[in-house]
Length: 374
Ligand SMILES: [Zn+2]
Image 1 (cartoon, rainbow, N blue to C red):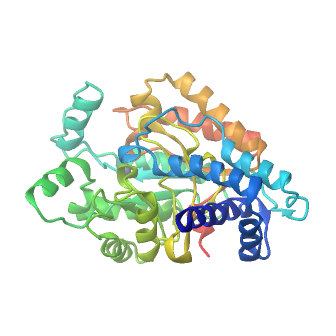
Image 2: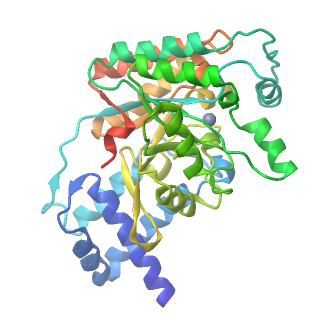
């Protein structure tokens, strides 16, 4: 009974947090207490909603989904339906909202590396020779940042997640880190040139937490390294490989305790969709009463082109479908195109431009993830 009661209270708490992303709630704790005390059909509906929310939050291994992912943000619709059915919706004021796109870029490679060649050979059956010259992707990165700055004319243009992996112990972990984690921080000139580009093109900078950053407790160290490289403290992050070791709730709790206020890791590997069924920034309830804000990551270049094998036109069409779901709900989501997208090795940039231009014409406004920090 205690366990059931605890589960129900957790469900109600998360429900109120999701509802508060859409409606102003002056006294969320009182509302949660009232809902919890009501029992019966209402709390049963909230628990059923929460079971689906939690399953999506949990995801599959390494953020690869265990089942089909959501093409619509149906769980936020269900929150409103349940609130309407309980006759609490009419007493709450709608949050003023405009459809918002958070343009973001994870910096994984700043040039061809042997690790990238190995990973491409495995995942795409395509071998891209590692560069033996000084060639790198910085021109392509600059082109992408410049495009963002041309579309977003006021304030910061887009959010760039930079990786500065802390070192791990153990030969197995070190080998895995060598293969999986970005390594450009080992080249001070590449890292400083990347940071110069973020300044030139008015980028918001966040931490791209390394693969082992959670399991090995490296996030405070990585945030400090990023701070000393950029001269500014960052309170936002997205985990490399969307890796939330130990399960997303424990991982988010650790991230929040390490100084990350807003995370944008909740998307999918291998496919795209509305993880947790939300189409706007929302708070995740953490053990002990805290919370962390999450910006859902709805579209990403590599899953669309490489894993799903879509053509440029198919990517554009799917992107419009997903973003239209966000637009009609006045939601706000992140999209991520990687460092190398604009390089001819990949050729994914033109589609990004078409998506962003479509969104601007449709009436989306643009914001950065740091703008959500308190
Ligand atoms: Zn990454």
